[in-house]
Length: 123
Image 1 (tube, rainbow, N blue to C red):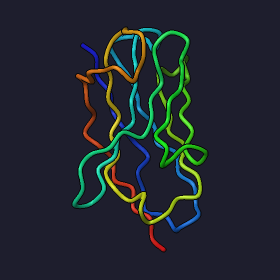
Image 2 (tube, rainbow, N blue to C red):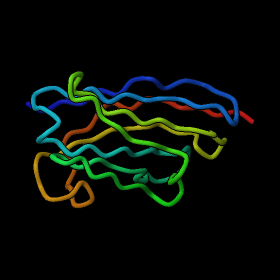
Image 3 (cartoon, rainbow, N blue to C red):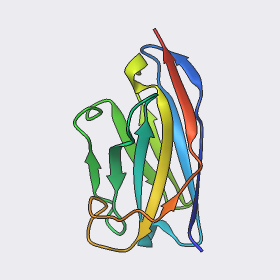
C-alpha cells in the first residue's frame, strides 16, 4: 500500500526558508508521482508543483516558481519541498499526495494523501 507522510511545517518570519519532507512508503520513487498542495486559511486547496515518476520531471505553479524547489532523495524514498523567501500569503496547510506511474505528475489523479503539515509565515 502506498503511503505518504509530510513533516517539517513550522512558524517562520517573512523572508525565511523552510523545507518540508514527504516520506513515501510502499513503492520506490521510480514508480511514484508526487504533488505538493496547500490550503490557505479560508481558501480552496491549490497545487504548488510536482515531480513525475521515472525521470523526475518537475512542474511548478506560477505563484511559487523561482521560490520553491522540489527535489527527491531516492535513497531515503523522500521528496522535499524547499520554500525560499516565504511570505505571509504562503501560510497554510501543506500536503503531499501521490499516484502511481502515468506519463506526468500533472495528470493525476492523486489518490494517496498525507495528513498535512502547517506552515505559518509572519510579517
